[in-house]
View 1 (cartoon, one colour):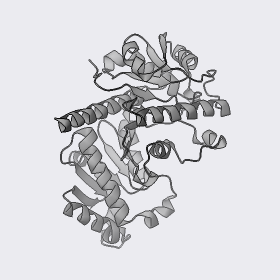
View 2 (tube, helix red, strand yellow):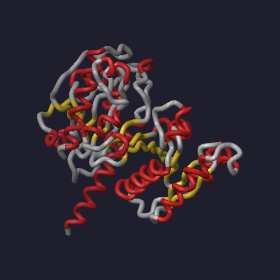
View 3 (spheres, helix red, strand yellow):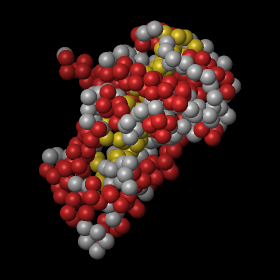
Length: 343
């Protein structure tokens, strides 16, 4: 039975023209089989009902006025917090849908910050459409960090699946800019945040952290770049002096091989694709994006809006289910730690 010792999770809709709404419905339909904790969707009751029907799901909807009502409704109906709604037009994104997506995201984040939700699971958005209605953040990670009172630089993106966890040091930037963005302080700061999160949210007392090189063959002693000698190696030495089990720099071409993956709990990558390519190759349908370093829990399925297949019943709910489960497990650990600390 799912743990109900903490508040329910808040699920933002994502772009209503994408696959987010139908996957929320599919996750609720699989709640018992997957042992999911109670959750509620934020807004869009009629839209969610239509999205469910597009997958052949006839699920009951329970509109709620307060998140506290979600746990009682959850076994029998998908709880949906009353709020704005919209027409279900899969594959046809527009400004109206972007406004609903932003309202849902904003409300979900606020509820988590206020403690009325145990965490927030964000549906996939279309960043370009949100930008057209005034959304000034690079993505949902930075938005949720802002709502949590955390600087964007202190919010760390981790991609996690059944067989791999990765953290990119640099994210949405041109590849040519990566060497200049990498610093000893950046690697140390984000690795410390990662180590703490693995202890707090994943129950790993002494997480093993493998740090990737930037250059082929880890630079071959400077013949293929010297970032390993100037930046990455010194950062690892600093982290080890603090008691963090960090190793490397490891050549990235062998770091994600099956045998190598048994030697660490998370791989620190130097840039976006170095982290995301192996994660998506291995765990695409169960990959979760989790934001570390926040006072609240935030997860998201590690895929986009998939407008091309929205409403066709083809989208796999595995990543959404995994994101809900991961948020629930992290919430349970945080609650247990608080209870133990108060004894």
